[in-house]
Image (tube, rainbow, N blue to C red; front, side, top):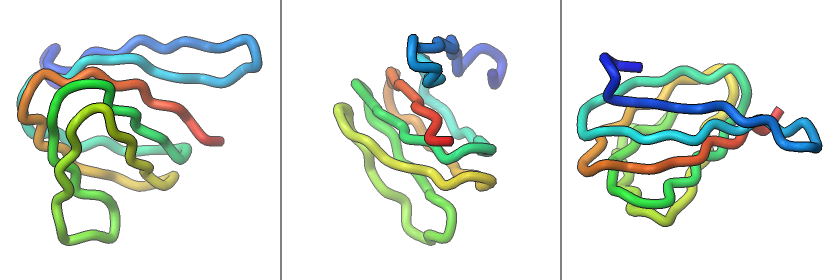
Length: 89
């Protein structure tokens, strides 16, 4: 995504749970959700603007944040960031 600045790979676990594992390079991004998501930042640093908020939140790995279904959120990635996104449907 975003001209190769965000990469992700989908995995399906034995219980049917779907996750994406990825890397984000520094930059500004906006993502949309269909299902609710849990974003587990394992390393790196970013700022996130969650739906319904006017305040950016600093996330430094390891740290987790949640995004509701059918929403969009913005990220300002400050350093190379590794993540695991779990879909909570």
